[in-house]
Amino acid sequence: MAYIQLNNQLPGITGLLENRPDTGDPIRALTQILLRGPNTLTELERELIATLVSYKNQCRFCTSAHAATVIALGGSAELLNQVYNDLDNAAVSDKMKALLVIAGKVQQLGTAVTPENVAAAKAQGASDKEIHDTVLIAALFCLYNRYVDGLGTYRPEDPAYYEKLASRLITVGYTRPREGITVTGEASFH
Image (tube, rainbow, N blue to C red; front, side, top):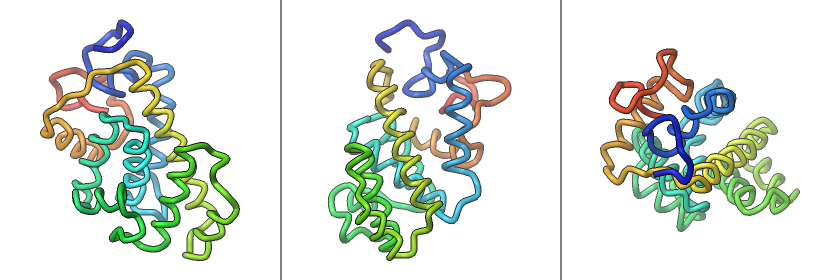
């Protein structure tokens, strides 16, 4: 249970966003643009950024949700393990490795990103927009991770929950369904 009284019984970030739609809707809209909007980075690559940051922040709910999404988009548990623990040898492009380094630096502290990190990403073909979006996704997921853990929200243990959530995030995206979100309905996620 969350540290504060919420107006719903939804887990993780979902319960928090639904508790305050006035603040939740703009955050959802930004997430939809960054993770599902038109971009030269694939949805899988953008979800990898979100997952890596969540993993480094030790946010179990967000890591579980976005790791399941990476897998649903064609990634694997092995890929995630490589990104978390052996990025140099991960099965991603050199450009993506450089962008994930930047994301990891943002997770630590924004000023940890150096001109050399940006130059390395550009040398691997990253555009200014891709670097911008990497930093913004990483910063947004730091917000999400701290929001979820700072209010002690409920985290389901069943992997099937995250698989269903991942399916919804891929097919519907991050915007709030018009009918709202319920515990048992199809729109019961993120």
